[in-house]
Length: 385
Image 1 (spheres, rainbow, N blue to C red):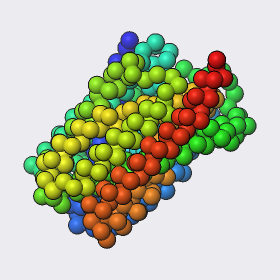
Image 2: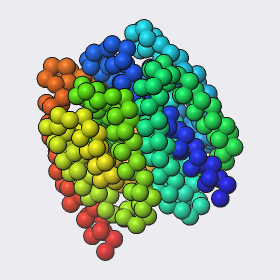
Image 3: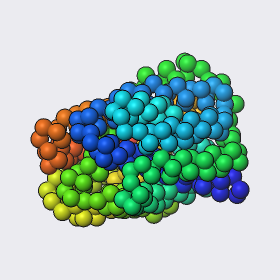
Image 4: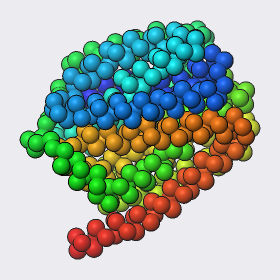
């Protein structure tokens, strides 16, 4: 029970850091006078860094058969770099520190999720009962950061990030490591996993669904500010989004069923489409912020189903690396396209066109998911019968 309490606390704290980076980096860059295309360039380039660093740290974790020690190293460096990033205003320094943050902070996400899934299995509790604390940390910190930024200025984010980083470091120091598998880590097992047609189709679906979600994550804060909203309203928007995830993650043991993952991903994509289509026509920043409560039917359903499906098909000895591949698609590859393309579309045509574009992408993801559900899920049921 002590291990579960520490892991839940760590989820709260790490996702607090993630909210300050993912949610408020674009807003901070906007405060420094950067244009949407420049912001998209920084975040998109960070996606390239993520492509390298997430597989690297995932494979190091699998090879060394430890997650906790890797987390400690990454947290120390991320806390220092986060302070430096939010203390900077020069364009070159912003690029440098942001790239280093992508190198050290973002790989913590798949390692944490691997820890969550492995310890939840070993303890006999649901994955959602642990992951819900991450959603809570993201929500609370989004709201807090918005107020801190409004009342104390953008530079105050440096001290807040460093303080949360230090606390998360202490908690991770006390955590137990994940139980390791006795199966040897081999490149041939990874090759079998990657070359499987079902795996490739699944990863392609994750990519198609992730691009519009990442575009929204990157430009929602800027869109709210453009409509006249304050930093507090940006924080409220992400608080509502992340806060709405809490109940969904907590009840995942009830609604998340094996064999239905593709269908659930398709349903979440349908609600992504509705959410983004409505966003394109909104002119009141408060209404746009309140609309983010639809997150409860999108990301937590999408991500929980994706993780469960991944763990059904990945070789057990490559779980951390498999989780890294999933995070790489969501935060890395899709983030590149989302940032570069999204920044260009936003700069040339405006937010309305951007949100109509990502709504169409989500609709395509829904159709693709339904096709895969018909082909693979029903095929599996027939084979089981």
